[in-house]
Length: 166
Image 1 (tube, one colour):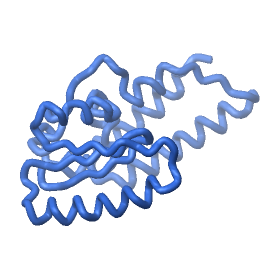
Image 2 (image 1 turned 30 degrees about the vertical axis):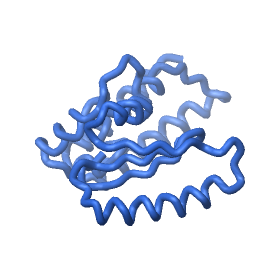
Image 3 (image 1 turned 180 degrees about the vertical axis):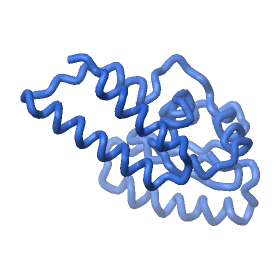
Image 4 (image 1 turned 90 degrees about the vertical axis):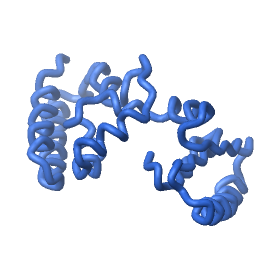
């Protein structure tokens, strides 16, 4: 959530509009007009029609929207870089400012939840195919990310996947 941007998020039952603190009134007016047009298209054939909720950064109401977001900020930085590579391009102070905007909850992050699931292959050879594909994905992610931390994260992910007990 960048303070200089407007975010439109279709959450299924709700459509959130989040407006950063540094958004100028002119940009906000254009964004809200575009939002209304997009919402008309998105909800034309949906039942029930989603609620449209608008939040401004640093208000108490914006905490509602932020609490509905996946808590990726709880994961280690290397796991975040694998899940969302543009984070690796942020300077440490920019990354800390971004993470500090999120509410910390007891809810597991997506990675924590995935690692808690038992992995049971359907066929004996499907586990080795899964591991080979996962290693390829991790290696590809490491080559497309510009930091060495991402390579370490890919190796860590591969090691964790190899240690999954059946």
